[in-house]
Length: 373
Image (cartoon, rainbow, N blue to C red; front, top):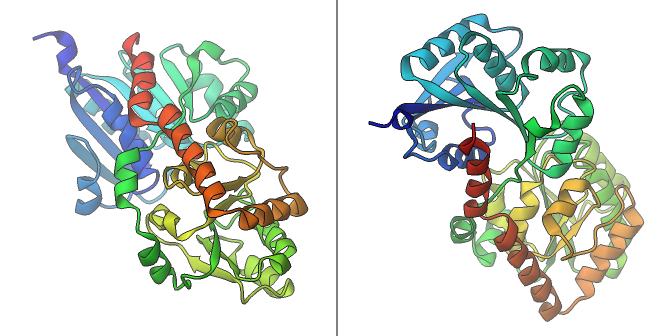
């Protein structure tokens, strides 16, 4: 048997549920013909049979850590033993803390290549993280992947001592056919959201946080609302700014026209409920929700941030972050379009996804990274 057929792939996740779909794409991207065994480790959380079944690995280990901080030497020692026993050749670690643990493993288990996937920007803003990265992440067998070109550039700026050749950009992907097949139809989605079928619905999905800047979205909707009499804004998500945003809705006197649904599992399935999707983020590592809207052929209004530029290309005009007037005017423009015009935009966005963000393209990009390692 060829030695490569005995290689094992180890993946370290912060928890099993977070970033589930895109993490699974990494698991699948490593060729099963080369990697005879794939193991996924969830640092936090007790064993969950349903979650384990949704992860495409030969074995899923739940370490049930109460917190993921400090050196976690016991965890490192346990995983070093796993690596030695199973001949692990590649480790993929999602987010900073799993990457830190992978870096420690690589100190004690030399014949391994680590790919640390950073899913957001500003991961190395803290001095402690930059110092740790200088010690653990500087070796040539430790590669860093940014989920967009803007994330890669952010990493390079924060870690000037890291060889830029060992920092790659691999844009996230989406299973286009599977996503489209799971979308709720328009009537069902609106019924579950308790939204009337005759309303024009703007949608937003995301954490209620400063990064998503729903405050600007509310002010933009307030600006345009007088000329959009049968419009409503639906915001799906929860977060620390929820009370403040609801108070702002009252102050703007648009509480009859804004719906906060709270968090909804697999919220992307509701995309067909929207006539337009609006993203007012000021920073995003990638912006998968934009891609999900594009798969649903939902017209977009979005802000001019790096990762959004990468995603939409020249299909739509992006708008200045925080500029509620410009964004409000874009809402009104979308509202005033004919169905044919909105359909044309949706089709153009869908074609962009097919060309740039399919699973097949993602797997080719990942394979190029590990093929020479």
